[in-house]
Amino acid sequence: MTQYIIEYFGGTKGDLLCRFLNGFDPDISPKRSNITIPPDIGCINWLKLANPHHLTIDRFEEVLVTNSHKYLSSHPLWVTHNKEYFKLLDKYGYKILKLRFEKKHYTTICIESNLKNRGGLVDQTGSAIPRNPLILQIQTMVQALRFQGLDWDTFLTSDLDAVGGRRDLKNAWNQRAYDYELFLSGNNEKREFIDYSDLYLNFNCGILNEYDIEEWKFLVRSSWCDYKENGYMDWDRPYPETMPKSPFGDVIENYIKENK
Image (cartoon, rainbow, N blue to C red; front, side, top):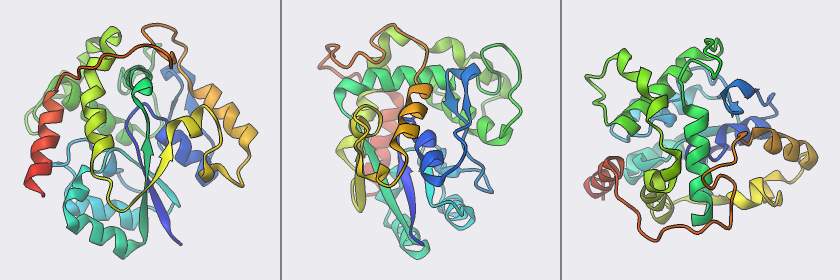
């Protein structure tokens, strides 16, 4: 059986899509802005690590070997600039489906990611979330490292507490636009593409063929955040032409140069 890695940026409903395609319960959490809880794959899903320096080839292979689901979610696979990673994909029978989106989607995607990932292991009511705690903890650490510029080797657990309070939704474009451009403009080798609008707005993506489209529409409607400000889901909102660079973008650009 060919298995598929769905490569996506946080805020583009990758876990929701994978759960639906695998036939799993959606596991949407209303207390956390309708985030979809990632499925258990039998090990930590290291493919969710945003920084390619942390996604070692051993971690990469562990996920490929352990996962038994047909569809597996992954954050951007910058590591595949290193051809050794492609060899493992071929060895274990995986293909990459890359989720593409447009500038008009950037603000909504960024806000959705901020709202759903804010708070780590604590939901919006202040109660602990019991399910998949290890996976959620890893995701929280990744977010802390990315948004706060913390060092992977030295940050403390207490450093994670401030993750939720440092999101400026009014400037969502400036937070991620340059990173999105890096994701969309390169690293497209050996990938098939699926489109954000076709999946979540028009509901006519080919990957949905032979699935219950009405069920999918219901799940997508249930997954949007209950938020109406700062351009969220405003597809006609004007967007800036400038894209401020970020420390994370610098890390990625340097990694790409080192692996060419």
